[in-house]
Length: 367
Image 1: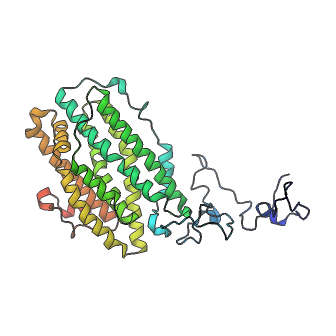
Image 2: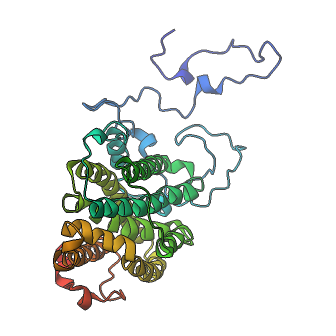
Image 3: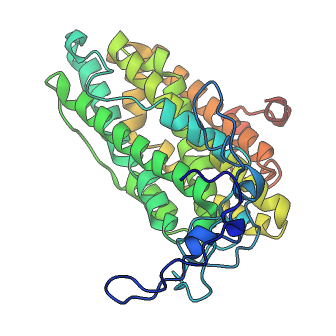
C-alpha cells in the first residue's frame, strides 16, 4: 500500500487492538498526529546532508528543550519517557551556528593515518633532527588525546535535542584518536622512539579536563590549547624535515581547524545569548594562560622545535631560537585574535607579557 496523504486521515478503524500474544496495540505510529507527513528534503549535489533534512519543525533546535530523553528531536514523545539526567539543557550551553556545516565537512574529510601518509618514503635523517622530530611527536601524542577526552566527558551530559553538536563532537573524538595515532607512528617509524614527558604538559591537560563548565572547558581547549597546536601544524612546512612530515601536519591541520572553528563560534554564541557567561570564561582563561605559558617554556618540546626550525643543533642558537620566538609570537597573536572573534576580548585583561612577546594590540585587532 502506498500512502500519499496524512495517515491520520486514512481509515484504520478495523485494525486489531491486541497482538497475537495479547499485548495492547494503539497504532499511534501509523496514525501519527504530529509527523510532518509529506514534507521531503531536497537532495543536494553532495547527497543528503544534515542541512538538507532540517526542514519544517525538524530544523528547529529549541533554546530550552522540554524533554531530557534520547528521543529524536521532532518525534511524538510519550509524556512518561524517562529523564536521562542531562545537565546541558540550554542551546547556548553547547551550540555554535557553524556546527552542522562543520559536521558535514568532518565526515567528508576523514583520512587514514595508515594509508594516507607515505610512510615508505620516510628518509633517513641526521640523529639530532630525528631526535627532535621524535620529541615533538612524543609531546603531541601526549596532548592530542585531551581533545578527545574532553568532549567525551561532556557529550553524554548534553540534551539529545542538540544532536548535531553531539555528532560533531563524535567526529572530533575520532580526529584526535587519529592524531594520537599518526604522531605515535611517526615517533616509531624511523627507528627513533618516544622520548621525554614532563609535568608541565600534564598540568595543562589537567587544567582543561577539570574545567567547571563545558563552556569554560571549550574556551580552554579550543581557543587556547588547540589553537596553539593549530599554529604549530600551520608551521609544518618549516618544522617538517621531509615531505612525509609535511603531509602529516597538513592532514592534522585541517581537522584541528574545524575544532577551533567550532569552539570559537560556540563561545560567541554562548556570550551573545547570556553575556554573564563572559566572566566565567575570562576566569578560566586567566588561569589557562598562566599554565600554557609554563608549557610554552617546556625545555624538551621548545628546544626540539628550535632544532627543527633551525635545521639542526648547530643552527639552534643562530636561527632556531629566533624562529621559535617568532612562532610563539604568532601563536599568542592568533589566540588573542580568536578571543576577539569569540566576543571575549582579552587585550586589556590578559596577563601575558605582550611587550616581551613583541605583540602589538593593533596587529591583533587587524587579524
